Length: 315
Image (cartoon, rainbow, N blue to C red; front, side):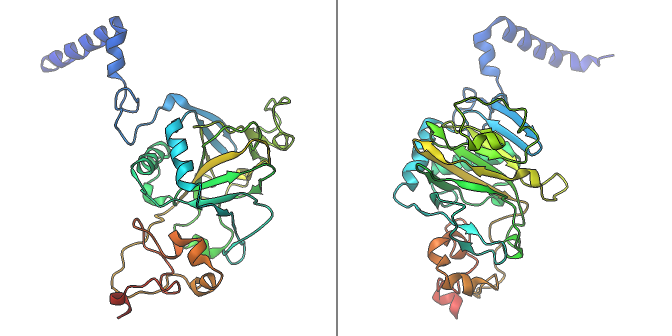
């Protein structure tokens, strides 16, 4: 039995429902805050109706039109004159090295670099349900004709990289451009690789696994760890060679713990990793400044070896 003091509220809610059903134009204003029309200025909106579940092994989801055309173009413009040869993490030392398995070029933005980047980072956190502080800076990548990234894992094999934020639990690949042919993201170990229909529009590389075609504005989320935090070998993935056109993408790696430096308990400047000196001698201070030296959003972990300490800290 409904309490008498609850009837007025129920009648109001019922009247709102009736009006929304009878008046479609009015109902459009009663949408969830995740809808652009309901909250055009909200940084954290997302629309669950645009998310498609692609696979459970690995766990992979595609968000159609996650980025606007303007956001895609803005990210490309930020990176265009700052690209360098892409590196990979050495399985033993964790050091960034050049390798023929990855032939793209790229660069890292700073966290919260500007209003648009901040909005994208907030939206990523809202979609993935993972804290912003657990994410690395967004990496912009550019693939020209024939360039690729051989299948690999995003979780780490070395202990050095696991010390900062732990394993990468999830990856979001945001496609910033369309690709005429090739450039697909491929999952060779996916359970759906044999059942996915493919025609002549797919590259030969894409036929070796479950594949996702780059489409400007779309975002692909996949998890590198199982729900129990063990590594998921079905998350093996790669970028097929570009055959026609060029490919621009943005990657956000997200860790199981915070990837931002915890505030120091003193003013002493010190390296936070025993390999800092080795990395600095290999040029990592210039190649990977966000980690080594830091930025406005996070303190670097090898500032002493990179000679980035202030005079107050040296004292």
